[in-house]
Image 1 (cartoon, rainbow, N blue to C red):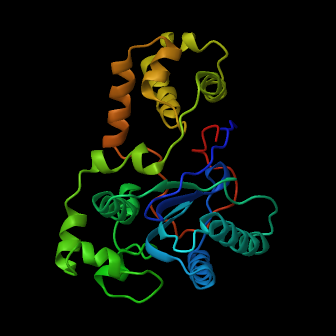
Image 2: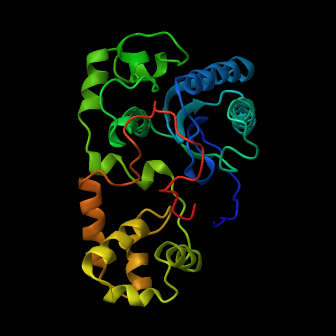
Length: 284
């Protein structure tokens, strides 16, 4: 597991942030519907306590997205309180100990209205991008389109769409998947070659990574697919380390994306699973 040195968060001029929390080692943090409901309850409680506005959210099996208007400039305290409350519940329920979330939440400043609209759409499209079809109850999308009253603050976002729900729906339906889903919104931190090499050796069970060039095609492609899913790694970085053609790595990555193999989880997050290290937790 690699670590990245912490840098001080920059303050948003608008006090609006896109925030992501993830399960440690990409482990699932929601195992059944009760867990989702409990998290929303704690989210509502922190809103009441810290008086922030919540513009959008998506709760996925092993991570969650939020757009928070931090009116009292307490973002770190808000997230710490939320994580502690939910972790206590989760550990009690599943008889586990230790950290549930990655040590530090990720956040990105939102300074422009156009970017805000795109992030709202990105968050609401998360289940679809993960291969989950049909009605997904654990995003704020249906609070907007079905006028459900739950926990979000709709007014500011709806003003961006002239308070017309049809405009809101059209905007959500007209998106470029290749453009909207990527590291730009996921806030993936890049890793240096030294850490990448350690991870790649562990995945391939191969001390001399150059030997992968001589593997048969199927075996080579399967290993490269796993390399591509290392959090923070670049395709050009993989090519350089392996001494292989960058276009080949990009081709494999493109094929994975088209087949929906990028960070894909099971399509039904409602099925209870044993709590353990995910098979897709590549060195994280």
